[in-house]
Amino acid sequence: MIKPILLVVLDGWGENPSFEGNAIAQSKTPTINRITRYYPEVLLQASGISVGLPWGEMGNSEVGHLSLGAGRVIYQSLPRITLSIQDGSFFQNDALLAAVENAKKNNSALHIMGLASNGGVHSSLDHLYALIELGKKNGLEKLYLHLFTDGRDAPPRSGIKIIEDVETRLSEYSCGKIASICGRYYAMDRNDNWNRTEKAYNLLTSGQGKKEKSALEAIKNSYNSNITDEFIEPALIDMGNGETGIIKEKDSVIFFNFREDRARQITNAFVLPTFTKFKREKYLFGIEFVCFTQYEDSIPAKVAFPPIEITNSLGEVISHAGLFQLRIAETEKYAHVTYFFNGGREEPFQKEEHILVPSQSVSTYDKMPEMSALIITEKVLRELGKGKYSFMLINFANPDMVGHTGDLKATISGIETVDECLGKIIPEALKMGGSLFITADHGNAEELVNPRTEEADTEHSVSPVPFWYIASDNQRQKSESEIMESKNNVRGILSDVAPTILAAMNIKIPPEMTGQNLLEILKP
Image (cartoon, rainbow, N blue to C red):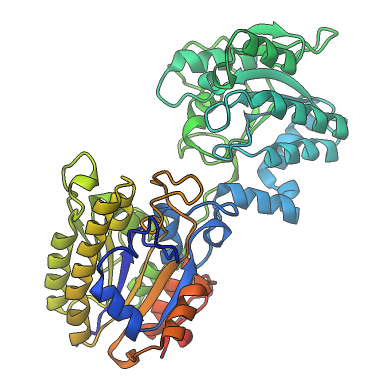
């Protein structure tokens, strides 16, 4: 008989010692209470650099499930690029060096364009400064910056200080000039407002726009007209002696935005030979255009930091072992237990099966905090009874999705529903000789009130998450001190889950999985 192993993800269930605003602590959870009392538990870090995000950044469902399934830290674009700067590999990047070499070969210019912002959402100033350093290291004489001002992911008048800082860096390096300024409203549209993209493109390639004496002057004049950073009109900077930094044929361009969605339109205008969204004043032949990340599969341009291919994820390893596996979630989290858990793979692995439970049709989940958890549970019990699957991944969305409403009472109700569901699933799995690992992808429901402002907190948190191991042979009553110790000490990260599960299944852990096997410390 197959002894199934279940991984149950309580989406948005973090660990927080505070009672105030903590929907989990305020809920009646007899099943979780029993698990905590009788089964081993460790805390896992689920935010920041431990899941490949910038230090201190709250976790999310996509990155959480990616980490759970990959068994290794997959650095997201911002920290991945920053780490490459720190270890020096950035300055040996083939795509970036191709742009440099093209400019050298043709005695042409290297243009660096992107969002000049400290918001950290689309770009990083550290990445911009590293590109200036790259130009300096390679002796480029013609280095031009085309900077888009933010005002959306950063304060609306923060641009002037940022441009001052950029000017300071340019002086320190004695390399590069700001050639144009443009609000992101024009340069970074993503909603098919091609008239905006056209204005930005014509600025960059033909110099169409306002003429300003300096970048700072352009921003000051905009502020004086009550135009804030996001909406600063395209402006060409007069660098004296008739010099302009417009992009010309055989030049090189590096677009340093790392987030894809708002980089696509302007990039397509540059690189697509056949382009019909607007009539280009100029189509630049022979430019070397480099995208920082892969903005779109169909864009014919070099990519400095292409997507990381994830091989030997948990799902793939189980498939290679010839075992059946099941993924089940409601609509809200279906992509997370399939696509993201499989490392960004659309197609299921062999013998991998999915069950999608439709989410309830309500405007917000505080109106129906039980969501589809009870239906998921019915289907899990039915599938367990078939004795077919060696591994099952189950997601309960309630703590996260109801938590996002900020409604404490509703979130408590959602959590109590999940606890009820666990109370049905656990004994059935154990009856079959199976075992369960219960964890979360990130925190949320444990912090519904901001401790500093006392306002409703509807965001994710940086809290660690629990990781319980439930099996018939590892049950014993724990002392209060043991429980407190497990609640206060983070012993692992989300990418430790996959190798731990493989160890429990007696399947060899592949070398690609760098997470640690926590099975030894999860035994009583």
